[in-house]
Amino acid sequence: MTPLRARAETAFPAARAQSGWEAWKAAFLAPEGRVIDGGQDRISHSEGQAYGLLLAQAHGDREAFERIEGWTRATLASRQDALMAWKWQDGQVGDWRNATDGDLLRAWALLRAARDSGWGDYGATVAAITHDIVTICLAPDPRRPEEPLLKPADQSLATPEAVLVNPSYYLPRAMIELGEATGQPALVRAAAHGERLLTDPAALRDWITVSTEGIRPAEGFDDRFGWDALRIPLYLAWSGRNDHPAMALSRDRLARATAPGHVAVVTGPRGGLRHQSNAPGFRAIADIAAGRSPVPPGETSQGYYPSTLGLLAELSQKEN
Image (cartoon, rainbow, N blue to C red; front, side, top):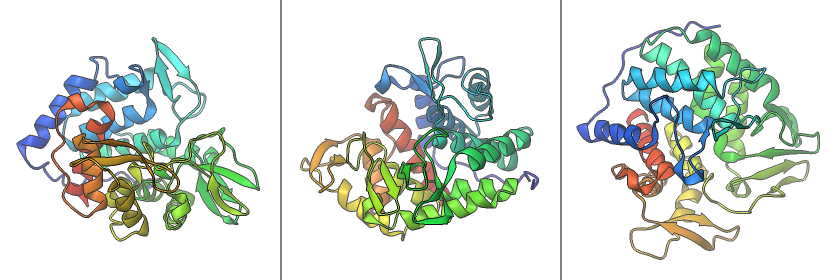
């Protein structure tokens, strides 16, 4: 494993960003370190914990970082492998299945904390999580079996004929950095293949099935560009892929709102508008897709998800 070397941090610019983080903590972070998603009946989930870790590290908030990681280790990180259970509800694990994006982002946050901030030695944990992602959350692409696809969970559909994929789980930068830091070239290869996958307009959906016959909407899921797919342009921009074809396609979808100052948050398979919002966090994603500087994160009254996306959008632009 490559040592997690420390490197100089860049101070997060502007007091507004710091106050946005403090407001986010006050609204969504419980004293014990649980990130609360009020939009889903106040549950906690693995990606929420990972987002909290990423934001805490970026804002230099070691106390919050260690609180979030401590709760995560004691609750969600209790499977027999190194991955997390997806959901915590009513004081217990509500779904033991993992969500691969949460595991990927947690490992990346721990890597950044050790490498960039010098916050302890998380190398063994990073290596274990990355190993298990590579071992049980990658599957051969039925069209090109030598290329790996990122599965949304270890138990999700994956046969020689068809693999279930959530395109918004691909954050190429995180996958590449983790693969290189832990000696897992398969994850680096999966990142590159994921970028190729996203060049196909058919992949611009929340959920798809990649089969021997190509890409199709995933059975059992609403066929849409929506709440999940919003993250595709965010993650590509964070990875420095502003010229990726999916950026322009995402920009077109997000621009289909009919009300002034709104974003088309959900569109159907033919681009028809299903839901629009003027939440600053969603508008920040539209700004990124259009190559503009994102709007300020806004008030936490917009809710957990757009508030979180707004802070992540600002962070992605700082690091891009």
